Each structure stands twice: as structure tokens, then as C-alpha cells.
Image (tube, rainbow, N blue to C red; front, side, top):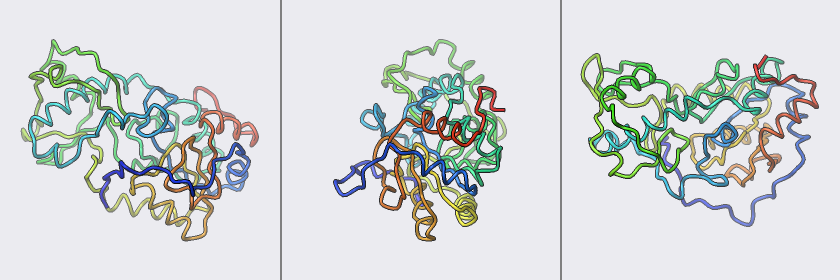
Length: 298
């Protein structure tokens, strides 16, 4: 299954309306066994924008596709220039109340698993463990020739050394860490090769048009089978890579609950969609359940 987005999907008038009642979410978590599926909307309160929500970036930014990245050296130069700049923003991002609440629910035994479509590492920074990163993570890089893995921080150091005068101002940053730069700003940005074999380096994330590794998909399917309910946080479910788990849960007659301010492709399969800010909802739910959520994530 490819992570190619349905960019032209728009909600139709037949979708059920959003709700301001978060009690069903609290009730599901109180029973335990809830699998969480998170998307870019959960990280907006940490300063990382969403693609499709209010102020989303798809209107101005088409994410890099896998095919373009592997076939076009100029596209790779453009990507790494923009991503090198965007990485600095990701490096400064900190978990918000939503991330901390999810970690707290797990510590209290209310969450059975966590799948994230995000590549920002903020769930782990908040204290969540055993996170399935459906689309990978920006903090790793992989060589397309020899499969060697490396730390993104080390690559950032090498790119900075190779481009000492590179300091453009980006028009914006996107959820994939890709900054908005013009071709003129990219200029003759120097891309560095794999230190093991000299091959092409790629962030260890699933690009649009690239397949999610089958073993990762199966791990997620197993988590859905084992869960009693599925809680979707901050995802429009526009790409099939996340929507398929909603459909799997619904087909198994497991309740699906969504917290997302805008309509999603999963609304018809959901028991409810809470159309309120995520941090607010999860903090209120934690308070109702007597679950402590604090800055340290303890």
C-alpha cells in the first residue's frame, strides 16, 4: 500500500457532524485497552504545522515523492537544503499537553499501544514507549545503496560543514520537516554521501508514493486486533496508511473515536468525532480520570 495522498479529498455534506462532548473518549479510556493512532494535528501545539487542518500547508506545499527523490539529483539537493533548515525547527520542538497526556494514559494502563503517523519523535520525548512509527522518523537517515542507518544529528553536522554560508529564511516549515525555499535560496547546496559506501542518503521516513514496510503494517494490524477500541488523535485520515486501521477496527465492531477539529475520512466509521483542540480535550479527559499529566511526563 502506497502512502500517496488523496489531495483532492474534501468532506461532503453527508458526514456526521463533529461533537463538543468528550465524555465518550473518557469512557473508552476508563475501560482500558485503547489503541491510539496519532497524526500531524497532535503536534501543531508544539509548533509543527498540520498538512490539512486550519492553516495547513498542502495549499502551498506538495511533499517530496519517493520517485522524485530517487530519480532526480536536483530534487535531492532541493530536498536536503529545505530539510536541513527544517530540521532545526524540529530540533527545538517540545512535547505538548496532548503528547504528555497520551504517555500518562499509557503509564496508567489505559492505552494498549500507540501508532503514530508523525515523524517528529515527540511521543517518545513525552515518555511514551514502544511507539510504532508508521512513517519512520526524521532523526535517522538510511543509505539507499547499503542500508546503513545513521543519526540525523551527525548528518546535520556534515551538511553544515559542507554548506557554511547556507542561512536562508524559510517561508514556512511542514510536518515532514521540509522548509519552504525557492530554487534561488537552495542555490548550489552541497549534498553529502553515505560515509560507508558513498551512496545516496535518505531520511528514514516513508515518502509520499513509497510503501510502508509490510512488517510494520502487520505489527499495526496486530495492535488493532488486540485492542478494545481505537482512538484517533489529530489525523484527517486522508492517506490510506492510517485509514486502513480505522476500517479494520470498525469491521471488527470495535469502537472508533476521533479527536480532530476538522472532518476526516474515518468519520463514518467512528462512534464520535470530537471537534475540539486536542490538548484541551486530553487534559480534560485526564483530569476526569484522575490521571496526572505534567511537564516532565511523570
